Amino acid sequence: MLRIGGITPYSATDYPGCFAAVIFCQGCPWRCAYCHNPHLLSASAPPSIAWEEVTQFLGRRQGLLDAVVFSGGEPTLQAGLGDAARAVRALGFKVGLHTAAMYPDRLRELLPLFDWVGMDVKAPFADYPQVTGVPGSGAKALTSARMILDSGAEYELRTTVHSALLSLDALAAMAHELAALGVQRYVLQEFRQLGCRERLPPTQPNYLDCDEVERLGRQFSEFLVRRA
Ligand code: SF4
Image 1 (cartoon, rainbow, N blue to C red):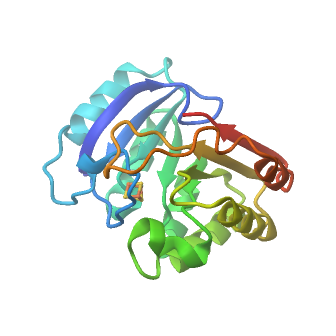
Image 2: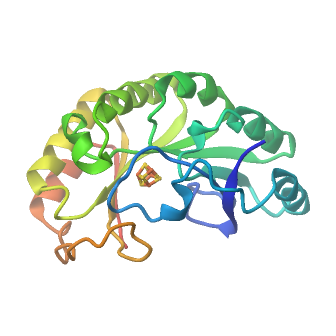
């Protein structure tokens, strides 16, 4: 049903306010230098866990977990995501999605199946290829971001920040773009080296502890710097 590269049986940080299991879906066509799950990027890698094992595990967690989050890789890459989300809901869990939102047409069909969506925003939309390595990626992400906001779904938009990949000016421009779209909940996440796909130079220490970040955060009703 789904090609699954791994599962985290218990997390208090992947779905706001919920204890959740996280299912890591195999495959992603983008190549962000800071990707923490390079083993999940190949769409043709054999699954490490069968879907049936996952549903059996979740059956044993009914009443103990609030939610199940589909993460990746890129979950919306796989045609089986919708049926998997329905199966999880039928077991009585809330259903969450972590996505880079690169397939707006699929996302349109999938959004009604999810209670909460965490969308990664990589850069100012015009500068996306500098992070993803894929021409045109920003236009797709922008379409998806609008769709999430229009859907009325619970959401969080968040950006992983490495000082060599996103200048403070770029961060300010991105925050301005998002605020203009009507984004209310926005998170900046400090870059973590552990498990990173490429060897990047060290990010500047305390890069996000500055007046510029405090100012850009004031544009959102909910704003947070998530520490590494
Ligand atoms: S979109 Fe996500 S999974 Fe894909 S390469 Fe970027 S960080 Fe990794």
